[in-house]
Image (cartoon, rainbow, N blue to C red; front, side, top):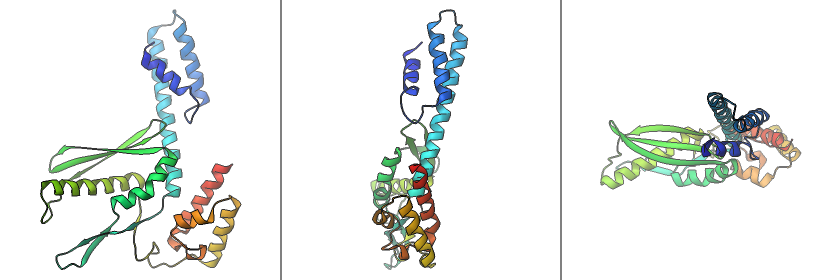
Amino acid sequence: MTDDNKAAIVHADSPGALQRETTREVLDTIIRASRDQSVDVAKLKDLLDLQERLLADQRRTSFMSAMAELQAEMPQIAKAGVITGQSGAVRNRYAKIEDIDVVIRPLLAKHGFSFSFDSEPAQGGVCFLCRMSHRDGHSETKRLVLPLDQGAGRNAVQSMGSTVSYARRYLLGMHLNLVTRDEDDDGRGGSGHVTPAQAAELRAKLAEVGGSEARFLNWLAAASFEEIPAANYTRALKFIDEKRRQGK
């Protein structure tokens, strides 16, 4: 048995999210077979291939489970960046990469996710790649092809920097399904706050699961339960339900 195969067995049999009874049974079979000199090498290879498929499925399942928990906690992000025209009037607003980072970094660490970026030449511009990896081993990569942002007054280096920043924002948004909001509406979108009954319901449900009101309201960018944006009511309920599930 190769060192790589031994390492795979040790990794799968270690305590953690990947430990499943089916995999343990397969690993026990592989270990016994590796010690039996009469076992056909081809059959042993088939068992090792089965082990790899089981591990891949478990890693993917762990990734999706952690992603669901991450999504339940992900808040909306304010569009603090502005793009102005020649007259100085605001043409567009966007969420700056540093504001996105402040919001997502602690949540990524909590749920075991990390990102890495790369780029390669592509027809018509540059292909930017963003890999989202989970601590249990599964990763997913998204790609975005963009032309260089050759805005007025920018040199080649500035054009590349602007394009990279744009690509990173959009790739993160694609992976995490980020929702951005204008700063002036605080995520309400003109729909106002939750009703008094909804505010009371959220307060009671949060108390049932032992959640912190201060952290909960900060996550929703609200000063009180009565000022929670109506658009965030369903998201808030899902967060509490997820906390209840984790506590069981």
